[in-house]
Length: 368
Image (tube, rainbow, N blue to C red):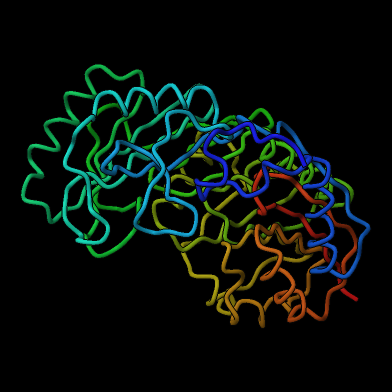
Protein backbone atom coordinates (compact mmCIF):
# COMPACT_ATOMS: atom_id res chain seq x y z
CA UNK A 1 0.00 0.00 0.00
CA UNK A 2 1.09 3.57 -0.65
CA UNK A 3 -0.24 7.03 0.17
CA UNK A 4 -2.47 8.39 -2.64
CA UNK A 5 -1.28 11.68 -4.12
CA UNK A 6 -4.83 12.88 -4.78
CA UNK A 7 -6.86 14.32 -1.86
CA UNK A 8 -10.06 13.13 -3.54
CA UNK A 9 -9.01 9.48 -3.77
CA UNK A 10 -11.71 7.14 -2.55
CA UNK A 11 -14.49 9.64 -3.24
CA UNK A 12 -13.79 10.46 -6.90
CA UNK A 13 -14.61 7.69 -9.35
CA UNK A 14 -11.74 8.57 -11.68
CA UNK A 15 -8.86 6.59 -10.16
CA UNK A 16 -8.91 3.24 -8.39
CA UNK A 17 -5.26 2.30 -7.81
CA UNK A 18 -3.54 5.28 -6.20
CA UNK A 19 -3.18 3.32 -2.96
CA UNK A 20 -1.13 0.62 -4.74
CA UNK A 21 2.60 0.72 -5.43
CA UNK A 22 3.15 1.56 -9.08
CA UNK A 23 5.23 -1.57 -9.66
CA UNK A 24 2.32 -3.65 -8.35
CA UNK A 25 -0.06 -1.88 -10.72
CA UNK A 26 2.14 -2.83 -13.66
CA UNK A 27 2.44 -6.45 -12.60
CA UNK A 28 -1.32 -6.70 -12.13
CA UNK A 29 -1.96 -5.33 -15.60
CA UNK A 30 0.60 -7.70 -17.08
CA UNK A 31 -1.21 -10.63 -15.45
CA UNK A 32 -4.57 -9.47 -16.85
CA UNK A 33 -3.15 -9.06 -20.35
CA UNK A 34 -1.32 -12.38 -20.13
CA UNK A 35 -4.54 -14.18 -19.28
CA UNK A 36 -6.27 -12.51 -22.23
CA UNK A 37 -3.65 -13.46 -24.83
CA UNK A 38 -2.41 -16.76 -23.41
CA UNK A 39 1.21 -15.84 -22.70
CA UNK A 40 3.16 -13.96 -20.05
CA UNK A 41 5.97 -13.11 -22.47
CA UNK A 42 5.03 -9.42 -22.49
CA UNK A 43 7.23 -6.35 -22.67
CA UNK A 44 6.12 -3.54 -20.35
CA UNK A 45 6.43 0.15 -21.21
CA UNK A 46 5.63 2.84 -18.67
CA UNK A 47 6.14 6.53 -18.05
CA UNK A 48 5.13 9.13 -15.49
CA UNK A 49 2.57 7.66 -13.05
CA UNK A 50 1.00 11.07 -12.37
CA UNK A 51 0.40 14.33 -14.27
CA UNK A 52 0.05 12.65 -17.66
CA UNK A 53 -3.49 13.22 -18.96
CA UNK A 54 -4.01 15.86 -21.65
CA UNK A 55 -7.80 15.55 -21.70
CA UNK A 56 -10.39 15.65 -18.94
CA UNK A 57 -14.18 16.03 -19.00
CA UNK A 58 -15.31 17.95 -15.91
CA UNK A 59 -19.00 18.23 -15.01
CA UNK A 60 -20.66 21.44 -13.90
CA UNK A 61 -22.55 20.79 -10.66
CA UNK A 62 -23.97 22.58 -7.62
CA UNK A 63 -20.56 23.09 -5.99
CA UNK A 64 -18.67 24.12 -9.11
CA UNK A 65 -16.77 21.83 -11.46
CA UNK A 66 -15.72 18.27 -10.83
CA UNK A 67 -15.93 14.55 -11.45
CA UNK A 68 -18.53 11.94 -10.58
CA UNK A 69 -18.48 10.47 -7.13
CA UNK A 70 -17.43 6.84 -7.00
CA UNK A 71 -20.43 4.61 -7.68
CA UNK A 72 -22.86 7.49 -8.29
CA UNK A 73 -24.06 9.03 -11.54
CA UNK A 74 -25.79 12.02 -9.92
CA UNK A 75 -23.31 13.10 -7.23
CA UNK A 76 -20.07 14.94 -7.87
CA UNK A 77 -16.75 15.62 -6.17
CA UNK A 78 -15.63 19.22 -6.60
CA UNK A 79 -12.13 19.13 -8.13
CA UNK A 80 -9.67 21.99 -7.79
CA UNK A 81 -6.67 20.10 -9.20
CA UNK A 82 -6.48 16.64 -10.81
CA UNK A 83 -3.39 14.64 -9.85
CA UNK A 84 -3.28 12.57 -13.04
CA UNK A 85 -3.68 15.60 -15.33
CA UNK A 86 -0.97 17.73 -16.86
CA UNK A 87 -0.12 21.03 -15.11
CA UNK A 88 -1.28 22.90 -18.22
CA UNK A 89 -4.65 21.21 -17.98
CA UNK A 90 -4.98 22.07 -14.30
CA UNK A 91 -4.22 25.70 -15.12
CA UNK A 92 -7.18 25.77 -17.51
CA UNK A 93 -9.32 23.95 -14.95
CA UNK A 94 -8.66 26.79 -12.50
CA UNK A 95 -9.56 29.35 -15.17
CA UNK A 96 -12.83 27.66 -16.02
CA UNK A 97 -13.78 27.13 -12.36
CA UNK A 98 -13.19 30.76 -11.48
CA UNK A 99 -14.88 32.25 -14.54
CA UNK A 100 -18.02 30.10 -14.54
CA UNK A 101 -18.88 30.26 -10.84
CA UNK A 102 -22.60 30.07 -10.13
CA UNK A 103 -23.71 29.15 -13.66
CA UNK A 104 -27.00 27.33 -14.23
CA UNK A 105 -25.57 23.82 -14.27
CA UNK A 106 -27.26 20.78 -15.78
CA UNK A 107 -29.06 18.69 -13.16
CA UNK A 108 -28.53 15.09 -14.27
CA UNK A 109 -31.62 13.83 -12.42
CA UNK A 110 -34.08 16.51 -13.51
CA UNK A 111 -32.35 16.91 -16.90
CA UNK A 112 -32.62 20.65 -16.52
CA UNK A 113 -30.00 23.40 -16.83
CA UNK A 114 -27.57 24.64 -19.46
CA UNK A 115 -23.95 23.94 -18.49
CA UNK A 116 -23.10 20.21 -18.73
CA UNK A 117 -19.34 19.76 -19.13
CA UNK A 118 -16.06 21.55 -19.64
CA UNK A 119 -13.87 19.37 -21.85
CA UNK A 120 -10.27 20.52 -21.48
CA UNK A 121 -7.50 19.30 -23.79
CA UNK A 122 -3.82 20.26 -23.61
CA UNK A 123 -1.62 18.41 -26.09
CA UNK A 124 1.92 19.87 -26.13
CA UNK A 125 1.88 23.36 -27.60
CA UNK A 126 -1.89 23.49 -28.05
CA UNK A 127 -5.05 23.66 -25.95
CA UNK A 128 -8.82 23.77 -26.13
CA UNK A 129 -11.82 24.23 -23.89
CA UNK A 130 -15.17 22.91 -25.05
CA UNK A 131 -18.11 24.09 -22.97
CA UNK A 132 -20.88 21.53 -23.42
CA UNK A 133 -24.42 22.92 -23.23
CA UNK A 134 -27.87 21.37 -23.04
CA UNK A 135 -29.34 22.48 -26.35
CA UNK A 136 -32.87 22.46 -24.96
CA UNK A 137 -32.26 24.98 -22.17
CA UNK A 138 -34.16 28.25 -22.55
CA UNK A 139 -31.18 30.29 -21.30
CA UNK A 140 -28.91 29.08 -24.09
CA UNK A 141 -28.27 32.57 -25.49
CA UNK A 142 -27.11 33.80 -22.09
CA UNK A 143 -24.85 30.78 -21.72
CA UNK A 144 -23.22 31.32 -25.11
CA UNK A 145 -22.74 35.04 -24.36
CA UNK A 146 -20.94 34.08 -21.16
CA UNK A 147 -18.68 31.68 -23.06
CA UNK A 148 -17.85 34.43 -25.55
CA UNK A 149 -16.73 36.58 -22.62
CA UNK A 150 -14.58 33.72 -21.37
CA UNK A 151 -12.96 33.32 -24.78
CA UNK A 152 -11.72 36.89 -24.56
CA UNK A 153 -9.70 36.26 -21.39
CA UNK A 154 -8.71 32.59 -21.39
CA UNK A 155 -5.21 31.34 -22.15
CA UNK A 156 -6.73 28.43 -24.12
CA UNK A 157 -5.90 28.69 -27.81
CA UNK A 158 -9.25 27.26 -28.91
CA UNK A 159 -12.72 27.61 -27.40
CA UNK A 160 -15.84 25.89 -28.72
CA UNK A 161 -19.43 25.58 -27.63
CA UNK A 162 -20.78 22.06 -27.99
CA UNK A 163 -24.52 21.42 -28.05
CA UNK A 164 -25.92 18.11 -26.80
CA UNK A 165 -29.43 16.69 -26.30
CA UNK A 166 -30.79 16.92 -22.75
CA UNK A 167 -31.48 13.18 -22.65
CA UNK A 168 -28.00 11.93 -23.54
CA UNK A 169 -24.97 11.91 -21.27
CA UNK A 170 -22.33 12.88 -23.83
CA UNK A 171 -19.57 15.48 -23.93
CA UNK A 172 -18.81 15.57 -27.67
CA UNK A 173 -21.06 16.33 -30.63
CA UNK A 174 -20.93 17.35 -34.25
CA UNK A 175 -23.27 20.20 -33.33
CA UNK A 176 -20.77 22.81 -32.18
CA UNK A 177 -19.66 26.41 -32.70
CA UNK A 178 -16.10 27.72 -32.71
CA UNK A 179 -15.78 30.80 -30.50
CA UNK A 180 -12.01 31.22 -30.59
CA UNK A 181 -9.29 29.60 -32.70
CA UNK A 182 -10.43 26.49 -34.56
CA UNK A 183 -11.85 23.00 -34.18
CA UNK A 184 -8.58 21.10 -34.64
CA UNK A 185 -5.68 20.38 -32.31
CA UNK A 186 -2.08 19.57 -33.19
CA UNK A 187 0.09 16.75 -31.86
CA UNK A 188 3.73 15.94 -32.65
CA UNK A 189 4.77 12.28 -32.97
CA UNK A 190 8.01 10.81 -34.32
CA UNK A 191 8.79 14.04 -36.14
CA UNK A 192 5.35 14.26 -37.78
CA UNK A 193 2.55 16.75 -37.15
CA UNK A 194 -0.83 15.11 -36.58
CA UNK A 195 -4.06 17.13 -36.53
CA UNK A 196 -7.12 15.77 -34.76
CA UNK A 197 -10.61 17.18 -34.13
CA UNK A 198 -11.44 18.88 -30.83
CA UNK A 199 -14.59 16.73 -30.83
CA UNK A 200 -12.78 13.50 -31.72
CA UNK A 201 -10.93 10.75 -29.88
CA UNK A 202 -7.17 10.94 -29.49
CA UNK A 203 -4.71 9.46 -27.02
CA UNK A 204 -4.72 11.28 -23.67
CA UNK A 205 -1.15 10.37 -22.68
CA UNK A 206 1.38 12.00 -25.01
CA UNK A 207 4.44 10.21 -23.61
CA UNK A 208 2.95 6.74 -23.82
CA UNK A 209 1.28 7.36 -27.19
CA UNK A 210 4.71 8.24 -28.57
CA UNK A 211 6.05 4.96 -27.18
CA UNK A 212 3.20 3.03 -28.84
CA UNK A 213 3.87 4.68 -32.20
CA UNK A 214 7.60 4.07 -31.90
CA UNK A 215 7.06 0.42 -30.95
CA UNK A 216 4.64 -0.25 -33.83
CA UNK A 217 7.10 1.31 -36.26
CA UNK A 218 9.85 -0.89 -34.85
CA UNK A 219 7.80 -4.06 -35.30
CA UNK A 220 6.87 -3.15 -38.88
CA UNK A 221 10.51 -2.28 -39.63
CA UNK A 222 11.52 -5.83 -38.72
CA UNK A 223 9.79 -7.06 -41.90
CA UNK A 224 10.63 -6.46 -45.55
CA UNK A 225 7.84 -4.01 -46.39
CA UNK A 226 9.28 -1.99 -49.27
CA UNK A 227 6.86 -3.48 -51.83
CA UNK A 228 4.03 -4.16 -49.40
CA UNK A 229 0.72 -2.48 -48.59
CA UNK A 230 -0.36 -1.30 -45.12
CA UNK A 231 -4.02 -1.25 -44.09
CA UNK A 232 -4.66 1.08 -41.15
CA UNK A 233 -8.02 -0.30 -39.98
CA UNK A 234 -10.10 1.89 -37.66
CA UNK A 235 -7.48 4.37 -38.78
CA UNK A 236 -8.86 7.55 -37.21
CA UNK A 237 -6.85 10.59 -38.27
CA UNK A 238 -4.22 8.37 -39.88
CA UNK A 239 -1.46 8.36 -37.26
CA UNK A 240 -0.22 4.80 -37.82
CA UNK A 241 -0.54 5.17 -41.60
CA UNK A 242 1.35 8.43 -41.85
CA UNK A 243 4.05 7.55 -39.31
CA UNK A 244 4.83 4.35 -41.22
CA UNK A 245 4.17 5.44 -44.80
CA UNK A 246 7.87 5.52 -45.68
CA UNK A 247 8.15 1.78 -44.95
CA UNK A 248 5.50 0.76 -47.49
CA UNK A 249 4.79 1.01 -51.18
CA UNK A 250 1.20 2.07 -50.46
CA UNK A 251 -1.10 2.64 -47.48
CA UNK A 252 -4.88 2.75 -46.92
CA UNK A 253 -6.63 4.38 -43.97
CA UNK A 254 -10.07 2.85 -43.44
CA UNK A 255 -12.28 4.85 -41.05
CA UNK A 256 -16.04 5.48 -40.76
CA UNK A 257 -16.01 8.79 -38.83
CA UNK A 258 -16.04 11.53 -41.45
CA UNK A 259 -14.40 14.30 -39.37
CA UNK A 260 -11.51 11.93 -38.65
CA UNK A 261 -11.16 11.14 -42.35
CA UNK A 262 -11.10 14.84 -43.16
CA UNK A 263 -8.37 15.29 -40.56
CA UNK A 264 -6.48 12.31 -42.01
CA UNK A 265 -6.56 13.92 -45.46
CA UNK A 266 -5.18 17.14 -44.00
CA UNK A 267 -2.47 15.11 -42.24
CA UNK A 268 -1.55 13.35 -45.46
CA UNK A 269 -1.19 16.69 -47.23
CA UNK A 270 0.53 18.44 -44.32
CA UNK A 271 3.13 15.70 -43.99
CA UNK A 272 3.64 15.41 -47.77
CA UNK A 273 3.08 11.65 -47.92
CA UNK A 274 2.05 10.70 -51.43
CA UNK A 275 1.42 6.96 -51.01
CA UNK A 276 -1.45 7.14 -48.49
CA UNK A 277 -5.16 7.22 -49.34
CA UNK A 278 -8.29 7.36 -47.19
CA UNK A 279 -11.38 5.19 -47.38
CA UNK A 280 -14.54 6.38 -45.62
CA UNK A 281 -16.14 3.06 -44.73
CA UNK A 282 -17.36 1.11 -41.72
CA UNK A 283 -15.06 -1.79 -40.81
CA UNK A 284 -18.00 -4.19 -40.95
CA UNK A 285 -17.97 -3.72 -44.74
CA UNK A 286 -14.30 -4.69 -45.00
CA UNK A 287 -15.21 -7.66 -47.20
CA UNK A 288 -16.21 -5.24 -49.97
CA UNK A 289 -12.61 -4.12 -50.42
CA UNK A 290 -9.47 -5.70 -51.84
CA UNK A 291 -5.96 -4.62 -50.95
CA UNK A 292 -2.58 -5.16 -52.66
CA UNK A 293 -0.28 -7.97 -51.59
CA UNK A 294 1.84 -8.53 -49.61
CA UNK A 295 -0.40 -7.02 -46.93
CA UNK A 296 0.23 -5.79 -43.38
CA UNK A 297 -2.57 -4.63 -41.09
CA UNK A 298 -2.62 -2.30 -38.09
CA UNK A 299 -5.89 -2.79 -36.24
CA UNK A 300 -6.82 -0.15 -33.64
CA UNK A 301 -10.51 -0.64 -32.71
CA UNK A 302 -12.55 1.23 -30.08
CA UNK A 303 -13.02 -0.17 -26.56
CA UNK A 304 -15.97 -2.25 -27.82
CA UNK A 305 -13.60 -4.29 -30.00
CA UNK A 306 -13.75 -5.26 -33.66
CA UNK A 307 -17.11 -5.57 -35.40
CA UNK A 308 -18.02 -9.30 -35.77
CA UNK A 309 -18.32 -9.03 -39.56
CA UNK A 310 -14.91 -7.39 -39.78
CA UNK A 311 -13.44 -10.06 -37.50
CA UNK A 312 -14.80 -12.85 -39.67
CA UNK A 313 -13.31 -11.31 -42.80
CA UNK A 314 -9.99 -10.51 -41.14
CA UNK A 315 -9.62 -14.12 -40.11
CA UNK A 316 -9.70 -15.13 -43.76
CA UNK A 317 -7.46 -12.38 -45.12
CA UNK A 318 -4.02 -13.17 -46.48
CA UNK A 319 -1.61 -10.92 -44.59
CA UNK A 320 1.98 -11.18 -43.44
CA UNK A 321 1.32 -9.67 -40.02
CA UNK A 322 -1.57 -8.10 -38.11
CA UNK A 323 -0.79 -5.70 -35.27
CA UNK A 324 -3.75 -5.48 -32.90
CA UNK A 325 -3.65 -2.28 -30.81
CA UNK A 326 -6.04 -2.81 -27.90
CA UNK A 327 -7.33 -0.74 -24.99
CA UNK A 328 -9.62 -3.47 -23.64
CA UNK A 329 -8.18 -6.89 -22.64
CA UNK A 330 -11.64 -8.44 -22.36
CA UNK A 331 -12.58 -7.68 -25.94
CA UNK A 332 -9.04 -8.44 -27.07
CA UNK A 333 -9.37 -11.97 -25.68
CA UNK A 334 -12.73 -12.47 -27.41
CA UNK A 335 -11.43 -11.11 -30.71
CA UNK A 336 -8.29 -13.26 -30.62
CA UNK A 337 -10.49 -16.33 -30.16
CA UNK A 338 -12.25 -15.42 -33.43
CA UNK A 339 -8.92 -14.76 -35.19
CA UNK A 340 -7.99 -18.43 -34.86
CA UNK A 341 -5.97 -18.51 -38.09
CA UNK A 342 -3.42 -16.28 -36.34
CA UNK A 343 -1.03 -16.81 -33.46
CA UNK A 344 0.68 -14.37 -31.11
CA UNK A 345 4.27 -13.62 -32.10
CA UNK A 346 4.96 -10.82 -29.62
CA UNK A 347 3.13 -8.68 -27.08
CA UNK A 348 3.72 -5.35 -25.37
CA UNK A 349 1.84 -3.55 -22.62
CA UNK A 350 1.78 0.25 -22.46
CA UNK A 351 0.60 1.83 -19.23
CA UNK A 352 -1.37 4.59 -20.91
CA UNK A 353 -3.57 5.13 -17.84
CA UNK A 354 -1.59 4.86 -14.55
CA UNK A 355 -3.59 4.77 -11.30
CA UNK A 356 -6.49 3.15 -13.17
CA UNK A 357 -7.19 -0.45 -14.26
CA UNK A 358 -6.98 0.50 -17.94
CA UNK A 359 -4.09 -0.20 -20.29
CA UNK A 360 -3.02 -0.24 -23.94
CA UNK A 361 -1.37 -3.18 -25.65
CA UNK A 362 0.10 -4.09 -29.02
CA UNK A 363 -0.20 -7.74 -30.06
CA UNK A 364 1.76 -8.90 -33.10
CA UNK A 365 -0.14 -11.69 -34.88
CA UNK A 366 1.09 -13.88 -37.72
CA UNK A 367 -0.64 -16.67 -39.66
CA UNK A 368 -0.36 -20.13 -38.09
